[in-house]
Image (tube, rainbow, N blue to C red; front, side):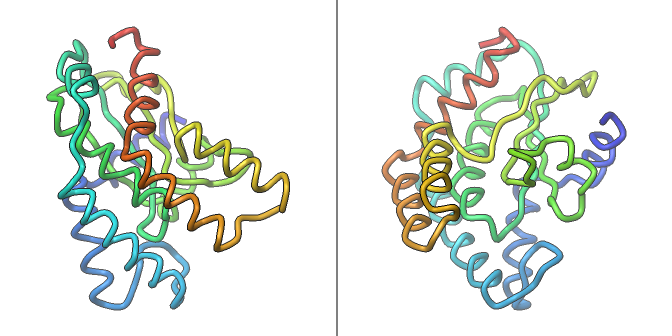
Length: 202
């Protein structure tokens, strides 16, 4: 795993660079990822709009701000994602706001399809679900934990849907996006603070 982490960090980009990459690819009629199609492009276009809105309108809670401001150690948040992922569009802006609020969190982004070895170490139910946040000690690069691809409540909704119907249809995906909008980032904040707490630093 150490080699995969090292390679991932070497390929990683900042959140600003990631947003620029997604936007520029859309201008070319493309998305990130190995698979290109009209459907993938349309998902990416919609997700870009969602991220743009959250980048402008989302504000951290006082609790989250206080906790990340007071971290006594430095961390790297290495996030595996792709521009077409609907969950990532709702989650990455919140992750970025938390990282921006702390001098001790260095947020780095890598693309899943370009880092297969890395994502294979962080599968969810044997699948390459994203986004996936890997919590690293900034100095040693030791993996302290990971999180994703969804907040606990959303993950439960998805699991129940799959158990009942075997897949996620368009209506459910719309319901899931509505849940994100209603949650307003609170569930994501709480999950990430809990992840940090395993290091006994929060």
